[in-house]
Amino acid sequence: MAKGEWKRSGADDLPLTGRSECEVFDDGTNTFFWRAHTLTVLFILTCALVYVTLLEETPHDTAYNTKRYGIVASILVFLCFGVTQAKDGPFTRPHPATMTQLYICFVHIVSYSKFGLFFQTVHDGRQFMKYIDPKLGVPLPERDYGGNCLIYDPGHPADPFHNIWDKMDGFVPAHFLGWYIKTLMIRDWWMCMIISVMFEFLEYSLEHQLPNFSECWWDHWIMDVLVCNGLGIYCGMKTLGWLSMKPYQWQGLWNIPTYKGKIKRIAFQFTPYSWVKFEWRPASNLRRWLAVLGIIFMFLLAELNTFYLKCVLWMPPEHYLVLLRLIFFVNVGGVAMREIYDFMDDPKFYKKLGQQAWIVATITVTEFLIVVKYDPNTIMLPIPFFITQCWTLGILCQHNYRYDITLRYKETRRRRQEGSSERDRVPGHADGSNLATSGRSKLNGSMDTVRHRKS
Image (cartoon, rainbow, N blue to C red):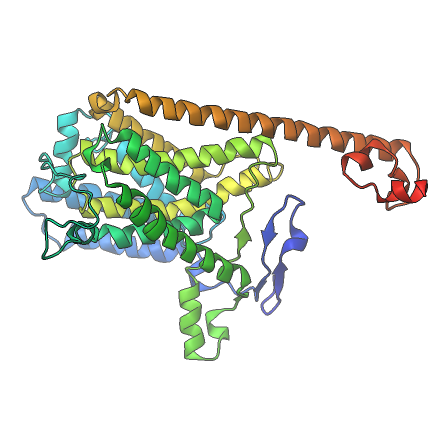
C-alpha cells in the first residue's frame, strides 16, 4: 500500500457471523515498532556476547553463573529470536509469543540444568525455587483465615469494625485490577459475573483442602463479588464502550506535526490496532455453548492453580513470582481470547486454534498436573456430602439447559432447511411476500400477510 493511502477495514469486509468491528484508518506507514529489526537485534546481541567473551571476567561462583549465563542469557536469546522471527497473530508487534513458550518450558520440559518442574520430585521442585529466591523453599507458616466474622465486634470497643479493616490489604486493589483486565479480555458482562460467582462457590467447596479459601460470608459476597470484582467489571465495561467508540487512525510518527501528537502515537502503539466486539451468544447453538463452557472452565482452573501452586511450592501470597505469573497471564490471555473468539465465530476462515490459545491451555493443564503430582493427598481429600449434593443439582440444571439449547439448535436448523426448500419450490417476488402462507412464515411468527389475504 502506497504511503499516504488510507486503508479502511470494517464491517463491510467481515463474514456474516455476527462480528462487530470498528473502522480503522491507516496511512500505510511502516512504523519503527511494527518492523522486525532483524539485523539490528542480531548486531546488538553479537556485541553483548563479544563483550562477555573478551572483556568480562567470569566469576568463580557456580550458582551465580547458572543464574546469569544459564537462565538469563538463554531467555534473552530466545526472546530476541521470537520477537524478530515469530509470526504475528491477532496482535502485531510487540507481542508476547515467546514468553508463553518460555513459561511452558519452565514448568514442563526437562533441560540440562533440571529447570523443568513437572518431572522433578517434590523436594527438588521446592528446592529449585531457591535458585530464583533464596527465601523460598521453606514451609509456609500456619494462618487463621476464617476467624471472627462479625462485621461489628462489640468485644473491641476501641475499633468494633476491626474485622473489615483487617481485610483491607493489598489484595483489594489486586482483585479490582484483576477483574478490570479480565473484563477487557472477555468483553462480556454476563460471562465475567458467572466466572466471579462460580469462583466463590469453588472457594466454599474447596475450603477443606486449602485453608485460605475459608473466608467470612461478607468477604465472599460483599467485598469480593460486589465491591472488588463488581467494580472492576463495571469499569472494564465502561472502558470497552470507550474503545468501541474511539477512532482508530494510525499515522507514521514523522507524519505527525506536533510533539504532543508524537507522544500520544507512541503511547497508543501499545493499544489495540482495531476493536472487535465479542458476541459470544452461547444460546445460539450447541457448538458455541460448549465453547463458552470450556472458556469458563479454563478461567476457573487457572484461578485455582494460583492458590494451589502457592501451597505446593511454598510461595507466600505476596511474593513477586505470584504477581509475575498473573502479569504473564494478562499479557498472553488477551491474545488467546481473541484467537479463541475468531476460531469459534468464523471456523471456515480460522481452521485451527491459534498458537497462543493452544499454549495457554497447555500451561493451565500442566500447572494443574504439577499440583496433582506434588500434593495428591490434598487434591484427593473427599468433598463433604452436602457440597456434592449442591454440585450435582447444579450439573442437572445445566444439563437441562443444554438439552434446551440442543432442541433450539435443531429447530433453527430445520426452519432454515424448510425456508430454503420453499424458496426453491415456490416462485414469487424477491421479498418473499407470497410465502406468507407457507410453513416458514408461520414458524417465524409473521402472520400479517396471512390476515391480509383472509380479509
